[in-house]
Amino acid sequence: MLLELIIGSKGYLFSGDILGTQLAIRIALWIILMSVWFLREIQHYWQDRKLSWPFSYYRYFWLALTVFLTYGLAWGILKHNDPSNIFLDFNNWLYLLIVLPAYRLLNQENYKQYWPLLMAGLSWLVLKTLLLLFAFSHNIFLANTEIYRWVRDTGIAEVTEMQSGFYRIFMQSHIYVILAWLGVVLLVSWLIKKKQTSRYWLLALVALGAVVVISLSRSFWAGLVVGLLVYWPLSLLYFKLNWQQIIKTNLSWFVALLVGFVLIFGIVAFPYPKPWLDVSMLGLLSDRTDIMNEAGAASRWSLLPELWGGITINPLSGQGFGATLTYQTDDPRIRQSSVDGSYTTYAFEWGWLDIWFK
Image (cartoon, rainbow, N blue to C red; front, side, top):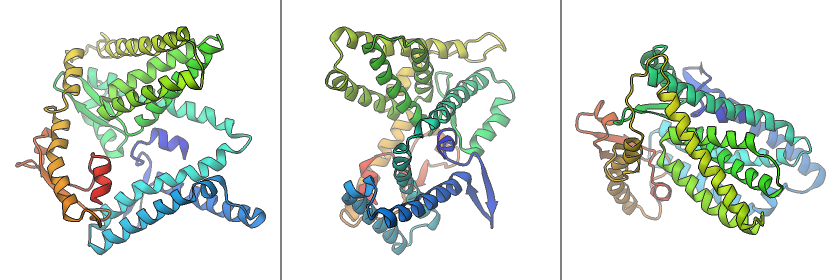
């Protein structure tokens, strides 16, 4: 389950048709995992008459989450929202429940045996991202046809050619790269405090940082900044680093990011086979940091008034899971299938406003 979450992105890397419905292996694994965990919890409660930590200490949180999910599901059904949209919307929240078996797993003495699995998944995720960047930047192995079709059909990545001539390789699974990068920064801090070598982990920072840049995700970049803002006081209060160690740690991850840029440029400009892109890294960063006019950002701004209007209709009861909105956008990806740029979706990228709307 852990490995599939890391490498599977949307979860349809492996799937099959059952009774006319496409069933992803992720859903099957989730059902098996939660069923086994639930039966084990019943067994433990029957023997000890005690709830495990997530239930006992955070029971009000789990109760509130259960009420929220039940209400959103029931209200979406009562409002006759599209059943498939309801399922997909509701399913996104259900995956929060895997923290329950994860907690049980981390409390076992042999939990460290799963670290190699985690490392293998992250290594493959990094390697796959770099290989896709190389393939598309050099147009090899029919990258624009067969590889693109495979990537699109399995949902493992979104490949987009940017105006600067760079190919954006974005995967939902890259969220684990962000977490791993921040985790390695913490580890490097600890190693520096202990005056131990950290060169292999610095190489990991280079590779992970390169993937974060390749994703060209403003949300991931913002998450990285927030993570660093949390890390800085943590390094003082928890790790108790002195100023020399703090400077050394920050220089380590900063230099690693710069080397990550060099790695990306080396992949794109590698002379064999002949690259067919003329990439401007400064132009690329300028495009992605333009939060008003860049296509994706402009699309979100176009959605905002419609989303706010939907919220004001039912500010207390909401619209339920699966509720949709239609808005106009100049995003070229939408314009390819919609002449007037109208787009209807149940998934919004406005965080808490999305939750409020539903």
